[in-house]
Structures are given as structure tokens and as C-alpha cells.
View: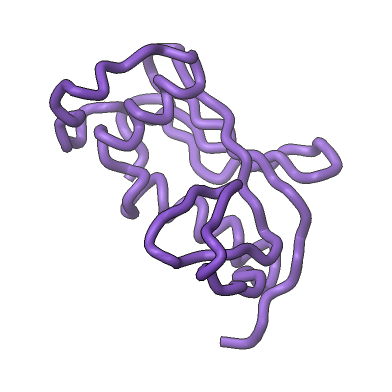
Length: 130
């Protein structure tokens, strides 16, 4: 795989059949990863620079759709966590983790480009996108 390009900062809108949803930032530029700990915004000094991952907008769109349909972000545990962050809901850190599952029904996945234009990646009027 060749080095990717910085496509700018995209956002992804996830809409559920329940009417809830969230918008998350999707960074396409270089970042620092590793070092054992860290978050998207903060990395330890041991972190290594990772070059941009995406070669084209189509590549980016395929990756986003995969993450929410078959990848790690498709699991109920992650989707519930994303919703809690979006709605600033308090969660008991001492409590159990969210249950993994496949019960949350995504109605639509939309990419929002850096210029504000939108592209629907997947849409199902009835049932979960798969």
C-alpha cells in the first residue's frame, strides 16, 4: 500500500432507527500512535508517527462504511459508548462494560466532507445496515 494523502477532516453522521445518533470527527491526516497509552488527541512521547492512511476519498468511504457495518464500530458496546459521549451522558466507571451485541439498528451512515457537502454511504429504510 502506498502512502496515503491528507484529505482533510471529515465527519461521520450515524443515525439510528430510534431517532438518536451522533456525529464523530474522522481524521485523515498523519497522527501519532502507540506508546502503550494515549487517545486521539494525546499521545505519550514514545508514540510513533503514522502517515495518512487513505489514498482517495473512495478508500476513505469504504473504510468508514466497513467500520460501522462489519468492523469494530458496528458492535453495540462501541455504539452505546459513542452515543454516551455525544449526549454527554455520565457512565459509572466502576460499572460493567456495555454488552456486545448486534441490536442497535443503524438507519443511515453519512460522510460530511471538509467543505460541508455530504455523501450517504449506506442507508436502509428498514432494518440494520449490513
